[in-house]
Image (cartoon, rainbow, N blue to C red):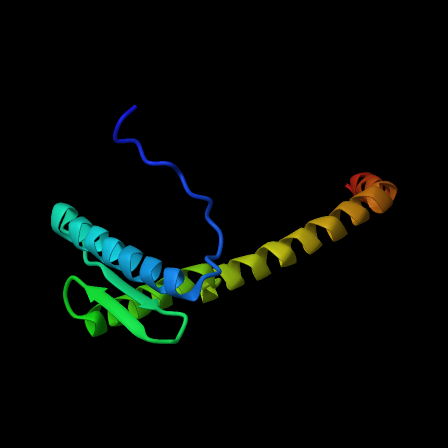
Length: 127
């Protein structure tokens, strides 16, 4: 089949010059895809890439600071959603207390059936 590319193994490129060229080409391709995603889907996209030397390359469909602020706000909301609320804690406490009361009442019923029965008999006889 003409035009088909051979798949390359995804592993670290040992040759420094080849690695830098590949980084540059793939970075441009990645940024192009990020821009396409932003345009086609009306998505707010922010992409930050650090090279092996620590140099920052970034793409943002709007302001990178706005995207980061929005991300941070969203992360805080998700974090709060994962934490139990005061109402949840109160309900859990009530459930535990009621469970304990039920267990205690069950024990009393198991042990005190005859006592209650005798008391009922005495009260019945007095009438």
